[in-house]
Length: 310
Image (cartoon, rainbow, N blue to C red):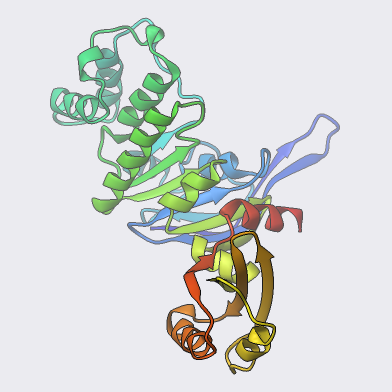
């Protein structure tokens, strides 16, 4: 669905030199995936999207979107993708319905009226269809821009900071809408600084800083950087309990922590789902009272900051 091969973009600088925005990007996104693109400001995320949607030309390298080649099939690419820019422009003096009608005609949508009504209703804007867009809140404008990106039923959707500046209710509506689009088999490419959002929505994540640093699922990224650790909450840990658990062949590391509510045994494992029962049996046989068991989860923010700082 999307593939890049050494995709590179340089911009001219005032001193006669060039600024490297995207450095030899190799990336593949499969059909039906929600892919999250993370990175600090200036990392090249928006530049990448602009190249992939044929808004600017790459300096070198190649890319294919919906099996069309960037630089050769630009018109077809623009027909088959939808894009929400970080600062979507609208005709502020026109109504919401009129705005979408104009863009639906530009996209040569067959049922203009039907498509406009469909997405205004889906994003909760139908009752405000006759209001001028200049009076809309930022959240309403953002939802209208999403409507615009979907009018022509694109196979692939590019969203640049889709919930930026939205209140929690509006952000939830947008995120729920992204999940609904995913069930329809659409491919969605999201640039975002919202790491919690990326963790919940994305099948795979790429971390970018001019170069692509890493690509994987959120869960696999945690495991690759930190491994998996299970916390056994005990009423009290006898002195020998650490050595007892360390004696199991699959245990990689054990740490005992004392808290006001009891002791915690933090155990590093490769496959907690199959290895936890053996640890629990050992603890029970030793007469240890187990209060509950849970996996220690590192946040995506910790993963992201670790990668960027490295």
